[in-house]
Length: 290
Image (cartoon, rainbow, N blue to C red; front, side, top):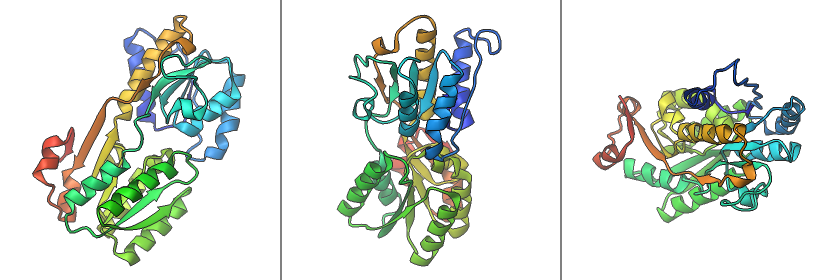
């Protein structure tokens, strides 16, 4: 059923389905495929799933949703999280999607400008900031542009690094070490999410504060994040799966927008980096990792 994303996301969806009475192996069977951050593999994986004739396909991230939609116009597709489905061309509207796609969209747009603001608030002497993003992800260019604009308005010099494979992350950190950049912002992307342990550990060794759009990075050791709570997205996707399995048509189920955002602070990392987190941020934090 699912197509890519970290296991704990899918576990959240499975737990919600279990809470709705679905017993794995008796009432429901899960068949998963992962592109492991290599978006060029998604069309073939989507076609493979379609050939298995599932009752529902659940997909995460814009490239996955597009691949699933290109592979089938009849099997229901539930978005666990992705960009604007109308702009993607997979739904007629949010209120009446039509077709075979529905679910939960992160249509509110990139939170990268807010992350840049948090970096500046946390590091008031910050003068140079770097961005790490995946150009293979169609949504990342817009997020990078929004982050760049926010940094410019704050008077920050900007460095940008692109990464599609792990080796490019290594190259980015090598450049960061030479440039003495004060902070790194990691933009939301499935491949970069999967590399969060590597990013956090190398950043800690180099003494680079890492800010992100997803909670999984500070939970892995980065400094801070602000963005949609994707765990809640996947939990909500279970509602759509349930409705469809009970006979509802996806085209009749309104697409919901992201409504829950999380500010996560890793105070343990802050101490290791010698950074004092401002009280105003700690008061607003939805999660503080000690």
